[in-house]
Image (cartoon, rainbow, N blue to C red):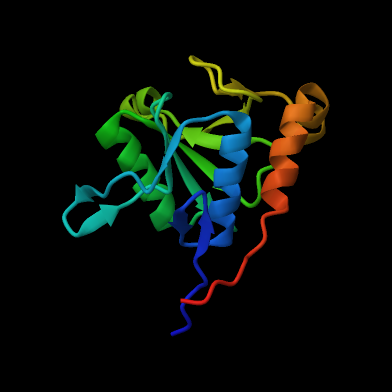
Length: 166
C-alpha cells in the first residue's frame, strides 16, 4: 500500500495536503483550531476522529476531496449527537461557496438535514459562519469578497510541499 505524503504546516503533521491547506485557511481567517482533537467512540466498533475542532465555536470540520460516503455522513451525524457540537462538511479546497453542517438541535429533533453556511472573514467570537440559505455560490462570492477572504483562499491554494530529509 502506498503511504500518502504527510504535510507539515506550523509544526503540525497533517495526513493530507488538503487538510494542511484548510489549516492555512483557518489561520488566515483568524480561527482558533485543533487538528484531530480526540477520538470518539460513537458506538460499538465505530471510532471517529474529526479533522478539526473550531475551539471557540463548538464545531468540528470534516475535510474531504469529494462528497462524503453514506458511512462518513453517518459518523458526522453521530458525532454531532454525541458531543452537541456542529459538524461542517468541507469538500475540496476552501473557496467562496456553501458548506453544509449538521446541527445538534436539528438532529436531536429528527430532522436529518444539513444546514448550509459560509465562513466569515476574521474570527467573530459568536458567529464564525453565516447562514447562507437562498444565496447561490456566485452571490456568496460577491457578498463576502474581501481582501481577508482572498488572502485566506490564495494562501491555502499556494501551500507547497517542501521535501525534508529524515
